[in-house]
Amino acid sequence: MLQKTPASPPVSDLAIPHAEGVSNDEFRAAMSRLAAGVVLVTAHDPDDGPRGEDVGMTATAFMSVSLDPPLVLVSLRNGSRMDDLLTDVPVWAVSVLAEDQRHIAGRFAMKNRVSDRLLFADLPYTRGKESGAPLMDGALSVLECRTESRVAAGDHTLVVGRVLTVGLPSSGGGPLTYFQGKYRHLS
Image 1 (spheres, rainbow, N blue to C red):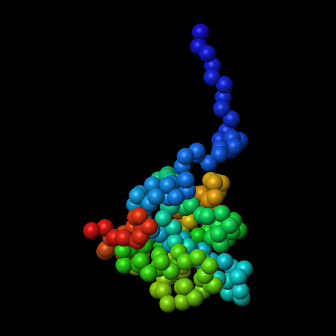
Image 2 (cartoon, rainbow, N blue to C red; image 1 turned 180 degrees about the horizontal axis):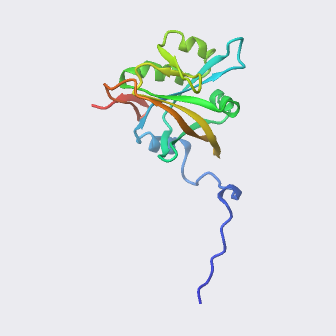
């Protein structure tokens, strides 16, 4: 006679402690050896000031999730301005950065910055038709997305977005990547 295994409780119901023997520094060092593409996530905050304000964030935790329907995922640090904004604003954009756009990645990765308005001031971009968010000129590709779901994941939120539009503004050059704590390009 087959013995039935009792059903496990859903993962969200389990109190999963920090893995014993794995420090934050060790985990960070291990993950730094995974090369990642670099994107700029942008959104327009209509409630900030008389004309609203554009907000941007550099991300390396971005991936394709599904072809049908077209879905992508970005990981946002809990409590970050982008996390807070995408809780209220359902549409946003992503620019897949080219290797010559390292300055953009660095600019939007700065912590404790005063205003994103200054960060966008001298950058060439177009405004997305669906999201109203900045789409960087010279990016390898640009996407406009609508949030489909948000999943709590430790100290981050995974935001799954349905891709509404795609643009391929640049056909030359390689991708900007992030490896062992530095921006790099493929050689």
